[in-house]
Length: 495
Image 1 (spheres, rainbow, N blue to C red):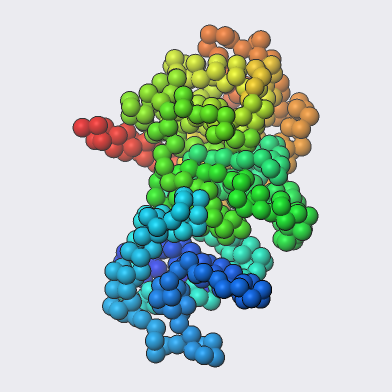
Image 2: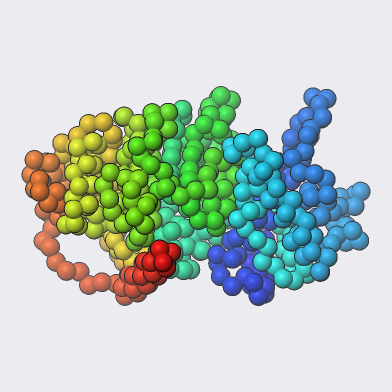
C-alpha cells in the first residue's frame, strides 16, 4: 500500500542537491516520518481522552504541529493549498523556527526516557538538507499520505523502513555499521530465546535491528509475523506495558544511526525507545553495579576502529580494537545467568597478541561459551570481513564449545543474500548441540592453554583454500580503506 509512496519520496530526494546518498535519503525521510508519526500519535491520544471526557495536553504547540505547517487541511479534510507554506517561506520556517523549537525539547524534558527528550535529541542531531521549498513541499505531501493509526499500517511501514536501512547499508563501505542481516539476527534470537520481563541490551545499536527483531519475537511469537498475528493478542496488558517501557535498552555513539534506530523502534511499536546517544566505551567498567546489568545482550559491535589510550583505561584488558573493548563491556554488563549473542570478526578466535589471548581466556573462564557460529564470506553485504557469532552464558566456565560452520551452498552477495532457510539447520541442531558434517564439539581441555586458539577447524572436512568471490575481495578492500581512514582520524584527533 505504501511502497509506491516511499519510491516517490526517494525520487523527490534524488532531485535535491543536498541529498546525494542512500544515507541522506534515509535521514531526511526519518525526520519527516517522525513528525508525521508524532502527529498521528497525538491525534489518537486526544481522541481517547475526549471519549472519556478528559482534555489532552499536546506535546507539540499548535503552530509546530504537522497538521498546522506540513499538511494543513480545509474543514472538509482536503489539503489546504491556500495556507500551506512552500518555497522559501517553507524552508525559512523549517530551518529558523521548527528545528530550533524541537531542539529545545531536550532542555525542557523531565528526563531522558521521555518522548519529549527523544524529540530534542533527534532534532539536535539532524538537519534539514532540502534547499528547495518546492521539493520539500512535495515530500511532505507524500509523507502525509502515510498513516500510523493501525497496527497493520505501522507493520507495513516498519518493513518499508527496514528496506531503506538495508539499501543504505548495502550502498556504502559502512554497510555492516548500519545493517546486520535480519535472518542472522532472527537466528541469534531463536537460540537465545528471550522472555517477557527480561531486559535486553545493545550498546552499539546502529539502526536497532536486534531490538526491533527481539520486540517482534516477544510480541508476536517466533512465527507470529509469518502467520499474520499482528495484534499481540496472546500478551496481557501488563506484558505489553513491560515491552513498551522496561525491556529494550540501547546506546549509540553516532548521530545518524541514533536517529534511524529510534525511528525504527517507533515503527516497530515502541513509542519512547530507551536509546541513549553516547559512546558506551567511555564508561569505566569498574563503576558498573548489579542494577545496571541485563538478562540478554544482542549486538554486532563495530570492528576495525582504534580507540584512544584514555578510552582503553576504562577496561581491564587494554586494546585499541573497538570490538574487543565492546566484548569486555558486554561481559561486564551481563547478569549472572544472562545470555548473549555477539557478532565479532573471526580473527578474534586466533589472534596471537596478548590482549586477544587474555580476552579469550576471560571469556572461557567467566562465561559458558557454548556455541560458535561461523558465518561465510558475503554474510555482511558491503563488508568483506569474515565473522563469527559467539553465544555465551555468564556465571560458569566453559566446558565444551559446539561449532557450526554455516554453508549455504552458494556465494552470498547483494543479489543472493543470506535468508532464513540458510539458518534453519543451525537453529534446529543448536538446541541439542548435534554433531553433523557442518557441526562438531570441542572440549576445552583440548584447547592449548597458552594460545587459547579457538579457530574454526571442521574435523569433518579437509582444509582447502576455496576460490574467493570477487565481490568479497572488493568488499575487503573497501573495509581496509575504511579502517585506514578511521585510524588516521584517530591520529588526527590525538594531535
